Length: 421
Picture 1 (cartoon, rainbow, N blue to C red):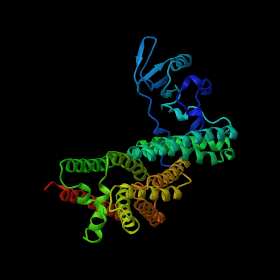
Picture 2 (cartoon, rainbow, N blue to C red):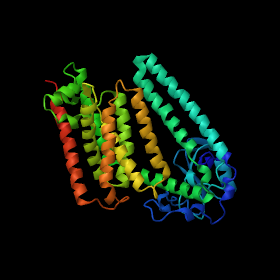
Picture 3 (cartoon, rainbow, N blue to C red):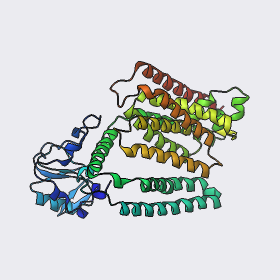
Picture 4 (cartoon, helix red, strand yellow):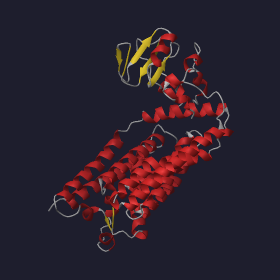
């Protein structure tokens, strides 16, 4: 997307002149056959602001002795007054025009007016790639030369190096020069409304799920700090306990436990991010089913191919969600924004590189087992999946509740096994 979607108005003098009276340019580009194909997803202009120009403020700012807060709607009478108002703001969340009853978000302020300058596009992404590569190599080197900082260095390399590295590399390969102005505007409107639609989907169940993982980790922390037995020995995937002790329930409980604060933070964010997309696109029930089964396939792969005496974490299930979503986005690649599948592929590449860099403490077998399990489940579900269905099939709903029950039973089992004696 071009920098025309920025919310920094002072560097965009064309904006207010572009909006002609009575015209809303993006209405003709909305695909009405998609769940998010509706301008009503945009926030309604508040009562009293209709028929006027105005802005939704995006920052704390003081202009001409008047203080404004983020989210506040400020109304003016004329286009010139609007121009003066936004000229002193560096961040605006939305614009109001007299002839439209919705607040226009930054991504819809201006259409693409020309094709993308391909040479400049590649030059910019090449610079991003070089910078991200330097950060990745620098942090990786720090971790390997200072082993006490290895985990933190690699996590920093993921967020500040690998993600922008892979993103810029994939972007450099994208043939945006083949996209017409019409293609660019169609993508722009579809992407913006999809992001608003996803952000408005309910996330209550996901917050509860992440909260349960945090509570389990807090219990682990309490047990480990009390000087008793290690919580990991109590309920994680301990190879000897499973293969020789017959404690196969550990295939599930290990996916509900974590080994450190960065571990739970990283997995909690990933679960929420991937889970909200599955819930929105297919079904909340499938979230529980896919997570449970791929935690198990990840654990089985760890036992079969790994060599660590103890393995722990929800990563197998999270990679399972990622693999499942790769199939979902392939099935619905025509209506879905292209960036969604691209970001999933990017995440898969980053996880693979991260696994190679951190092979000493990362269970790559569990990651691979979870990812492959998710892809297989996606292929099984492929024929009957529907995009954002209004109802969930009874059998899927039933299996979803069974999966939740098994996972909750796993939480109870962990509490029993790690409780101080």
